[in-house]
Image (cartoon, rainbow, N blue to C red):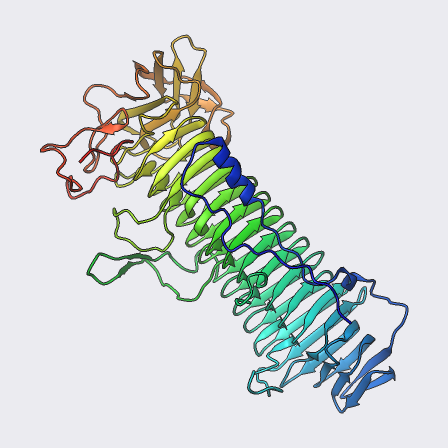
Length: 637
């Protein structure tokens, strides 16, 4: 008998953005492309039938060292019980050192109903599915079932080294029902299927020496409660020879993973549509510190690190092609990246709480955030991708280096050198709040902002800037407020259509000290409370108008401040200065106060002044520091 399969659509390159564009049509095309990826289970829905079919072909009672059988299709040879034909088999009892073996023909559909099963096999897989078309393992309601293997195996197939898991299936496997299954895999993997694995019910607990749950062609999870503790990957699909396979899909249920290596790993696409997911990988975010590699032409690669590093992948959730998240609640604490894709990451919805020793969200190609609630509470860099597009959602990022970084993701390149490629940060919606010790947002190419809210807190040192870019920054809408240092100060470019006030302070303002900027008529007031010490403040909103006089106040108190320190009721404080917004980017500063700090140059309306001696075509140095940008416009050389 054969069943029709629904092919999986696994796109290897989701969101193929062709650089930054402010054209609405370009944005719409990108967002349509972002929503086009989905995958479907290869297993038929018939596998979800009730646990109590009308006909039981055989009842198997395990009796310690052997078993008794009522019915057909089962042979017993000592402690090895073999199912030889299609049918439904109810199994109960204890097998102290033996194996339940399924060895039917390739067209057979076999259903196993576990109703209080305990099988220990000291030298092989307690449940070995050697041959069938599909096996459905149903956990009877209220039943407790336990499978345990030993620490060494005698392989049935020595050349292939199989079986090598406590539950090992060479064909499609579905686990469902309303009972419980506990797997202790002391040798290698817990549950392993060489075809498609679907878990659509039951309470599953796996403790494995290596990988917890592995479906080579695919893993699909729905309506199940799963707990995995693994010495390798928690959940894995590793088929790399077919682009429509090698995926992991979580539709619903509860999944908890604690893994020494990757929490959840898909060779192609990892799709999360719902459920509650908790992942701890590599000993959590304090398990490893980021390592930065630098390479100069003609010189060997060097590495800088402040802690022990590992060559083992210890990411929270990872995909070779695409991570697509449209729902669910995720809590991820990872030594390496919390969310990682070698291709693209798309987040349409859901709630993500991320803590990591490296990047919060990382894609070698593009990151697209269209919705959801995302909190990166600890990271080296918050969000990293060659293209970062934010069109919706609420995002809060805390980073020890850059908050958002449009880069190649390879971790190579000498500091201060521009990596090759087409890099851009595009913001057209949502609310993004960044708390950064390095650059707030850093693009090795361009920045485009047309709508949404971007609030930046930090950095405090003059070797970084709240805004850093190598190309241009076109600001044509939205709310931008960035409080940070002034040594490497950059502002939106003078070609922007929305006005910007760049405020410089004569002395550092304390963390938590609010700022108010208001029009002379008092009708327009912007209030912001930075969480870090700052010497510069960049403000741009649609309400700022050319030719209007604005008054800047510092100190005082704010009550009822909003998300990210924006808004509230301001009282007290003292006037710092008043100035007219006369240019697209207007500097507000008392006489004698300019950007610079450590090696920086004064920033004037989005452009840096020419250094003594003029630009020679080489990157100028100031007190040993190469400036990271030129205020919003690159100099002509």
